[in-house]
Length: 138
Image (cartoon, rainbow, N blue to C red; front, side):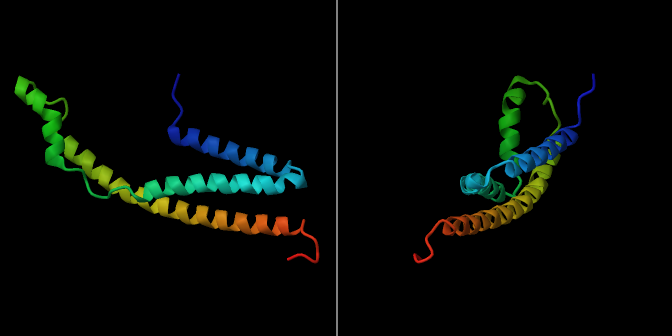
């Protein structure tokens, strides 16, 4: 049995979430739209926290010398060869630093979109609550 590619698996979950979200939102009665917007704002605030974590990722490669001394000290002391080469460790750490920029950029866009969603949600919620006020009251 072959394993499913992780990208295909995650894309399938994303598409299913779109369909489920569409039917859940359109199936809600008008009286429940305001609480639904409040929950949407709460979910977006969690996304903001995750985006801030993604933006805070360090773009520097970890200290290679310190990392190698921790990995290899027990093996060197016992006279055993390292399980992986030093070049492999250096390449892996360089790739981690390169992928950090991708994380920063995607986290920044997620932060912007989530903030726009929160702001828009509060505007819509405020407008919906204004419909329940009496005409004379401001």
